Image 1 (cartoon, rainbow, N blue to C red):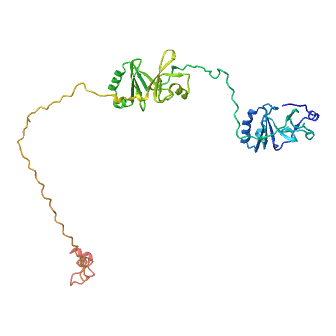
Image 2: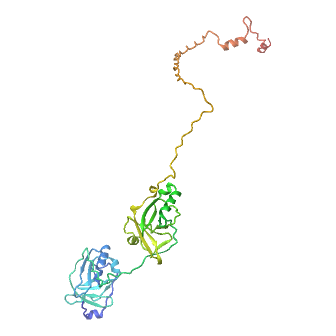
Image 3: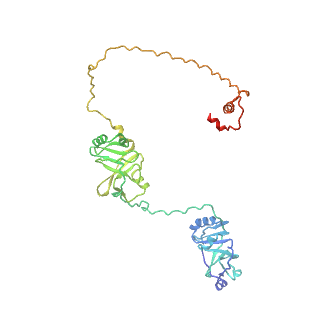
Length: 382
């Protein structure tokens, strides 16, 4: 880019604030670094700009680029970075919010446009074509690291340190007399507790070891001469001694990648000197239910005892029982059908009824006239 001296009009008369109104369209965005074009174009499209044209960096502009935007969003203009211009005369662009009083008298050189800033500073920029902004912008090339920088690593040792965790043990490593301890456990436990354990037997440094693992449900409480371990970060196949943790505290995916890359392997950590630890592994297929390995035996073969014959103290004489047949079932005769009684004939009106007869008892006798002088009370004196 090449700056030229300002004309006498531009030097004598600076721009003045413009009256508030609608945003002019189109607007010219002066992007000093073309690397910002993808983010700025994405913002303009998200905020509803109607059309966007871009002028890519050229030899005379260096890494500078321009955007010509119709209906620019108010947010992008108000931010002020990059600066935004509006065309107030042919080839004359003044920063939005300002207006030059003598803008009609300004004549830029041929093939150039003039950019006016509020400070009065003007800049002549070579004119050039604009093209529609692409939908996809190519990613910038990443800088190539110098020789040796790409292989730079910072080794950090992972160690076991004491921890106040109270998690229950779910894995036990038996190194001292493992089979004798398993036998004693089977003698002191019932079938339900044995069913909750699985065991794998292996050889390490020429010595036999046994590894007990809780199968399901809450882990049992075992009293053994063994290394009791708990799960690390709730990983089902990684165990560390109870009361310890890893330092530095790593993410779960980082621990899995470092210590248990294979899900079909059971891994446990055994502490060593100086906070270091040794990693031991057994295939998960080597574990079998402990109950299946227990075979109950007897110290002596059972002795068959023949019962002794003896005479009854109260002998009974011999007898023969005859089977008696049940008597024939008695058949009850069917009851005779009940014949309804004929209805009593209605009393004849000629025969006196009960009331008539009672009244007749207290009335005058046959052949005696009714005496009005004898009151009815005298009847009782007879």
